[in-house]
Image (cartoon, rainbow over all chains, first blue to last red; front, side, top):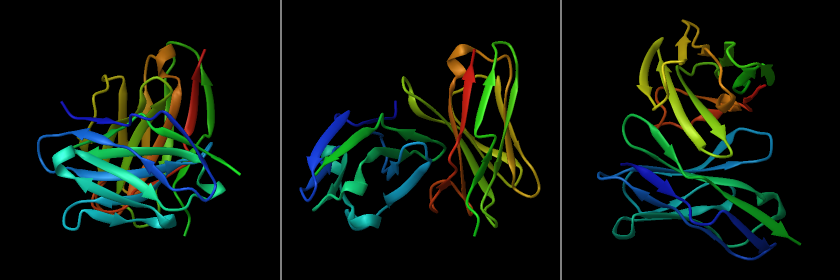
Amino acid sequence: AQSVTQPDIHITVSEGASLELRCNYSYGATPYLFWYVQSPGQGLQLLLKYFSGDTLVQGIKGFEAEFKRSQSSFNLRKPSVHWSDAAEYFCAVFTGNQFYFGTGTSLTVIP
Amino acid sequence: KAGVTQTPRYLIKTRGQQVTLSCSPISGHRSVSWYQQTPGQGLQFLFEYFSETQRNKGNFPGRFSGRQFSNSRSEMNVSTLELGDSALYLCASSQTGAYNQPQHFGDGTRLSIL
């Protein structure tokens, strides 16, 4: 069965520190992979997506993610976190007929 | 360009009632997808409509249904409401498909079942 796992429910980082949010997926074929961000009381915004090609994907707001087939992972990174990055982050996989989302990682940024 | 508009923003219903939620996509977008978000189950895909036809469907019971009109606006209907249907319902639109173009999400309709 298809699934997406985000092992970290909540992460706290200091402003200016680097960030890595983990995502593992379970899917037999090559997946379409996404990272979304959700601010309180709002819908989701697409940060980046991977379909094929270069395994390092650049997104908006300075985020990037690396697809590692051998590890079934698609971790999200940012070299220097800003206070405005505090939000909920969701990893998702599209299998050809529907989306599966991880349970999300809540990011707190401390000054 | 106006974003995805969902109405109403908040809704309170009682068990056994039915409810209809509305979603107006970005102009020119023909694909509309619906999602349910709850603290316990997280984000779950309900269905996708494209050109008035349901193209993809998640694992929800038949009480959850939808439709899309010729102007791409979409409605989602939930019949015989249960307490577990309390959730944030999100709608997203894209030009031609849920995966190969960015989805743009609305702010959602928060449904509370008493």
